Length: 229
View (cartoon, rainbow, N blue to C red):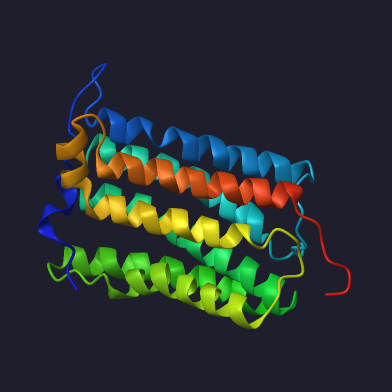
């Protein structure tokens, strides 16, 4: 499954303050700030989780969110497959860290040790595989798409058959919905920009992804562990 040739042709390419693709660039700032905020709050022990010291799942997740914002900024300053690699790599880490955290919270803390590093390796390998095949002229996105969407399906199924060991689990579907809307606006990049003439679908994608991370942060800040689970 090759990457569409028009993927690098974004609807909004306006330059402002000497910055090409200005809105697509600056709309990554919320992700960078939220990633930093998550790392700081974890360091201060203000977020509720039960990560083992050898599997810093949420620390990895928020650090990867920060680097996703940085990588996406770099990519939109000069769109190319080489720059896109540094955008997708931390995103894959975010997906895998989130999957590990939720599986462990629903099915057992011990799963952190089983899933964390193998999933990180799988996510990283999917992006490296795409980059190598792209450089050979026969790009294949299938492993990366599997890393991106299969965990969402698994999490939805997981929530139907099990219960979290923490409160505020109803925030998780909202997070998934925001991500789904982000992917939809990315797909409708041209149409949204043509309709609004102000903001493109791709810029909205960045902002909706940031909303998803904000809801995740709020969930971790407010929730409590349920003792009898």
